[in-house]
Length: 268
Image (cartoon, rainbow, N blue to C red; front, side, top):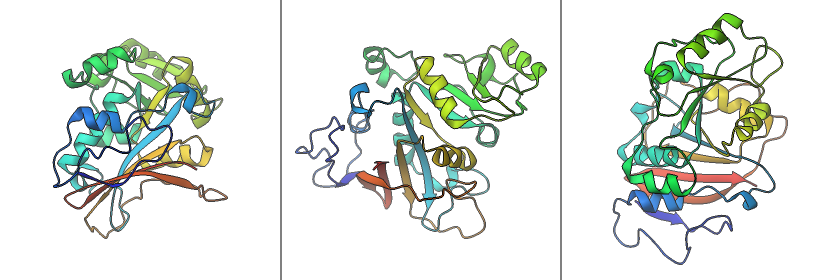
């Protein structure tokens, strides 16, 4: 893995004069990746209580998945970045459909990041937060019954009381983040910050990411560009109604390994 674009963002904690991957390509250590992708400190977030980062992968022709899943367009290096971003987060946010399609399980504790998480005041693993309007979820799955950190379920005030009760019986914590059936993205971010979760990571899917984009609450996009072409009619990484004015993000860094590009864009 090698750096293609030097970091000049003042919120980045790495030293731009040091090239961790100088010379031939090599596999970065997890500590190097964690330093490289460190969240901005609270005073560097422009007054925002929380920082919402998205991590997505896309093919060269814009497909955000293949056969309904992201794994076929990923790589070993992409999974190292994926694992590192999870290890840095307080909470991982995912839509209910993505949780079902990708077979989400509880986030696991990783020894390589244990000391870093302790120093940051974090638990052994991030919580998973599932965004669901109808709560049509299988609450017998390990994601709800046996996580290291209790799973959160974000829903609206109009959610069926019986489904809320089922989630709570399974051990999940239900968070109301909307006045109606669905979840308001800005309220979801505020609610998670109110619980002490300020390092937020969303892994989509496309509909949820589109909602965060439309609400103007996304701070950073970590986008892997996979050197594959799939054609077909797969979804893009973000879906839903178009924003009225396209939002400008600034390129913060760019890495490459075996043709995969690992870009990071921050709100401009």
